[in-house]
Length: 85
Image (spheres, rainbow, N blue to C red):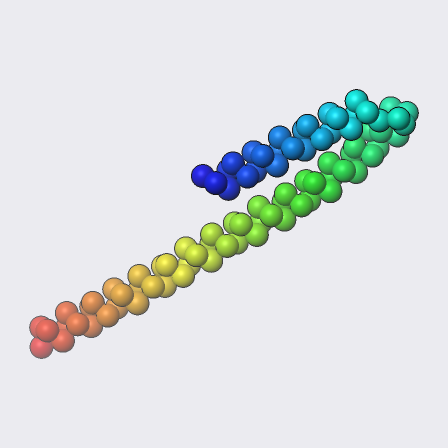
């Protein structure tokens, strides 16, 4: 649940920062919109990278756990076969 709160916090920060930037911007509206678009695109790319890294980490953890369980099951099966003999 903590990662969900982090993402929510990031999104809230982006929204608040964008709003403040628009309210305090000394530039023309078209210039401000271009700057805002660039900033949002950068933030989106960073968030995408972070989410991708997190996803890959979770997939790696799950893969490791599956391999561990497979090894345990194999050991149990071998021990069971040895006990039967």
